[in-house]
Length: 459
Image 1 (cartoon, one colour):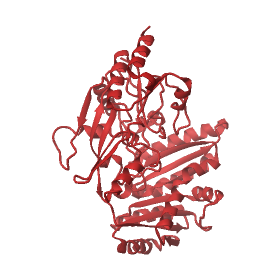
Image 2: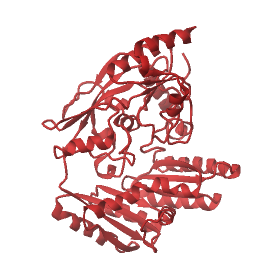
Image 3: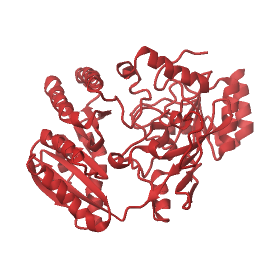
Image 4: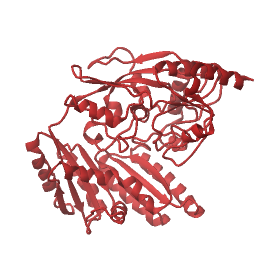
C-alpha cells in the first residue's frame, strides 16, 4: 500500500517526468563499471523545484534517491544498488558566465566541455579536463571530484568550486559558501559536498572559479627506453621548478594497444611522456626545450614537439583514445586510479611489474603522472575464473602497497561500490566512524545514494 501511495504521489507531482517503464529503468541502470542495477523508478528533473519535490516525497516514504548525470563514472556512484528513484539531472544544464567576477554559474547537468567553451567566449579559462569532458556533467565531476591531465598544474574540480546550492534529503535547500574570492565565515561545508558522490545531497547549482585563458598551448611527445626512466623523469621535471600544464605517462602495453589500433607510435618506445606547457606563445617552445635538456640523460630516445595547434590536438587525441583501445587485452577492465607521491612513481611501477610477473597478468598503466595519479588497468576475460581470482588478489595487494607508500586508493574516480571494501586500508576505525556520522547529519534515514563509499546501518 505504501508503494502505491508513493507512486501515485510522484505521478501526480511530476506527470510524464516520472517513470517506472522497463526501458527507462534499463537505460539508467549502468555506468562505466560494466555493472548494472535496475532502479525502481526514474525521474527526469528539469529544475530545482523538481529536485526539492522529489527529495521531500522520497524522504516521506524513505525511498532511496540516486542522483545521476551522464552515467560515465568508474566507481558505480550512479548505480541504484538498493533500488529507489534514479534522479536524472542532465536536463538541468544552464550555464552563465560572469566575466566581471570571473565566475561560471552552472546547473549540475551542464557538460564540462560546454562550460569551457562558454568561458572561452569571454577569453576565460576553466581548467579541469577529465577524459570524459565532452560527455560528463559538472554535477558528476563535483560529486566525484574529477581530475584530468591539467591537474598537475591547476588541480582537480574541487579546487575550482567556490560555492554550491544543494537540496538535502528532506527537501530543504542550503547554500554552501559564497561566490567570493575570500570567505572564512563558518565551516567549509562546500568541500564536504565535493567528492561526496551524491551521499549527502543533490547539487542544483555550482559557482566555479575562472581565470584568464593562457595565450597559447604547446605539447611534445618524449620517448623513453624504459618505464623506470620515464618515471624518474617526471620527478626531475617537477623538482626543477618547471610547471607543465599536462604531464601524462604511457607504458609499453599502452603503446602496443595504440599501434594495434593503427595509431602512429614510435617503434622503439618502451614508455612515453606527453607534456603540455601553456602561457605566453613565445615562451612555449623554450619551455619544452628546457624539459628536453633536463631529461636527455635519463633514457630519452627522442622528442617530437608539435608544430601547430592541429598537431597539438592530435597528441592529446592519442591519450583520450587510449582507454577504450586497451579493451583489446580482454573483455573486462578494472581501472584503478591510485595516487602516490610523485617521487614514489618509480617504486609503484616496479611493484606493478612484479604483479605482472607473479600473476601472469596484463596490467596497462597510464595517466596523470605529473600529480602521481596513475591509472592501473587490469585487463582480463571475465569467463576465466582462475584469472579473475588472480586479479582480485593483485588489486588488493596494489591498494595495500599504495597506502603503505603514503598514497590514496582513488585520485579522481571516487569510491562508490567499486572500492568501498578497501577503505579500511586507508582509514582507521575512528576515521570511518567520523565519515559515517557526517553522513547521518545530512541524511539521517540513509536515502541519499545508499551503499556508496561505505555501508551504514538502516534506521
